[in-house]
Image (tube, rainbow, N blue to C red):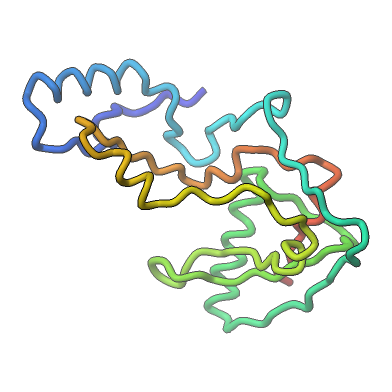
Length: 176
């Protein structure tokens, strides 16, 4: 296990708290620092016995192999570096002859952007959810009157729930 740094050097605390409240929060954070990821890839993720994501792709839909999208060399370099990082962390693996192939793209962020996957065809093959998304205005209103509002950056949280082995190749993407 990676020894976490002093937790308080990594966290911003609102200056409007009283000294007593700030000290109480600091003690709480120090005593719970083991639940946070301090180095990329150090989070264990969620045990597959607890939850595993499964793709219920409709059987009547034919797999789609998107052709590789070409990028300028600077963007190709960003994509290559991100793929290497994800391979090193064990979030992705190389596959041969997948039935489904998606493209990648760079989405606006600092610098050239962050790599995202274009699963348009796979999304079309997925049954529509019967669950409505929560209304953001109701969620925001529900915090009214609360004394505290905590924010947590769930950095790459989507890599923490394992995708079922039989579905992993459906999320293949092409970069070379």
